[in-house]
Image (cartoon, rainbow, N blue to C red; front, side, top):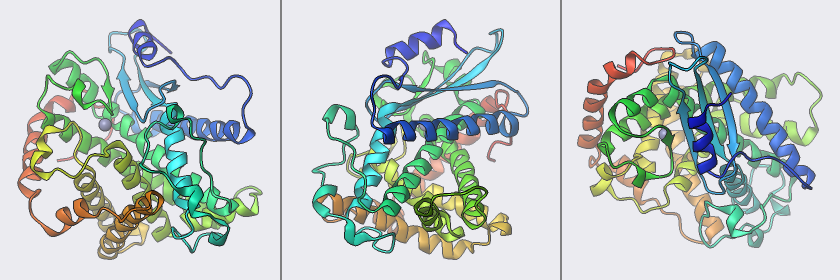
Length: 381
Ligand SMILES: [Zn+2]
């Protein structure tokens, strides 16, 4: 499914990625796995999430080597309107590499698999690269097979979040809103300088909304995997089942996987220092505050749905430990002390309160414009 406008956008982003030529079998396996996951998410979205205004959903892996994703909605005047999600191939490689390195360091997640097989020197990177392909470094996978699969489970969880983040931009009418109010024709994640026509706080409000939809879906998928870890449907290789039990063996493990993966991905998307005084200038909220909203969304879900069987109060404590663990893990692979300034300023000061209230005010003003375009579900109050 394609129109000229989308074709131009895709070509300007380097075209679609095709797995051609000779590849290492593990690369082929990675892409087959990711494609089958994205296919199932596409079907799930069409059936479950787009009930008010059904539309076809199409996704594509784009040739871009950097960490980026985009969303595009074809005009409703099109004969068959559709929504498109583009994810750079570099995003997939970058996520696999960062989680691979984290698990390749024996001090990170020592309880998973056999950490003594790992070598800290292999894990080392001088800085967190968001462009693995151009840096010509080969991907780093842990030596221990269980730790290797565990690291892929973290990367897949981050991709799940990213996929549903883009879906929520589309589902909640953000694309129509941005087209009505600016000259932009698509939504791009990692290009803040592109957004000069609109108050960055409006973009941040929409990002916050997209995160909210994404975390709901990611948590739901993680708890489905938890059921698979307990009652595997088909014959699964032992290493794979061990890794799945570690990453999704119970509600606490599944939630930790979600929080750890999302936070690490946010840190990759935004490598700048925590800049609380200028937080209104960016297209996306900065990682610590973004993560604190996600944590409070999960907290609300656990409060409202006892079936998750995870006390919200316990979750909040666990989540802050997980976020600190993620900073420590990133520090370990860079051979540096963890950078906890951002997290501490969100959890121990009130500097972000007025700013968060401003975003809520903006949400109330733009909500009616989104309401007429949403594809399904209820918008946040
Ligand atoms: Zn976004």
